[in-house]
Image 1 (cartoon, rainbow, N blue to C red):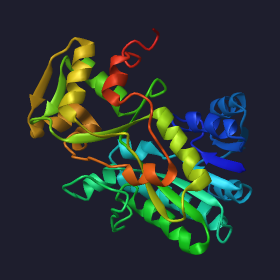
Image 2 (cartoon, rainbow, N blue to C red):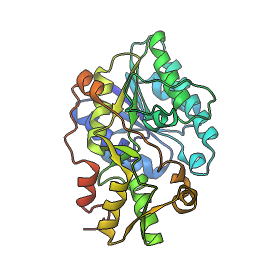
Image 3 (tube, helix red, strand yellow):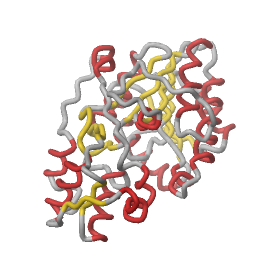
Image 4 (tube, rainbow, N blue to C red):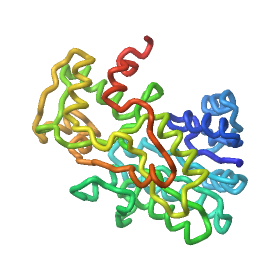
Length: 307
């Protein structure tokens, strides 16, 4: 299968591409820079130059492929607190590539996140059957997710993978865990809010990469899938593990202090986001086999990257 991958040189993309190639697929990756293009070529993939806001480039890449995996997301506006711009840009990308696949029966795998279920305030463990109304496009990932699922009615074998907020492993250089470690080092404490009982799901990067391959090859049209191996780790446990490996105390702070301490993560650290992947595992035969988050932190690659 000829597979067009956006975000192919990013954290997860750099792991998905080898999975695809090893399975015998031909990969073309979207590259916005010479550095990304060189990384893709070195990995054995073809290069398609363009950016997420270059809709003509996205349309051409999708139209020439037998399947599409959409991993890229413009986090710049989001990190600046402008969730609307990031969400609108992603929705346009999904709609453009989806239209190029209309009526083809080809697979289209789009990345979403489990945190949208926390934003919906379920008050329980989230499942693949849970949906969130689109509402305003500014709601992160929701509009793109619903647009993807709707493509099933237009003859596209579309699926959505809701990834855990922590996709962890040795290749994770810019995710939430490296950021939490950097904050702890700077502040001299590893903090959690209140009693730290809010739960975060997590998945090892290699298990996440394998899930993308399985979804491309076998996910039913219109399916929602969960990339969650650890169903829900209390945030206090994460903070204590970080503190232990940095030789720093783990301390509780009031919610009012969270934004100043955690920056853009302040709104996320108190979100309770327990997430089940039971349906995904049963549907695709996905069995996460790599270390969980706490065990991965004990491996120390986050703390001694040169070791």
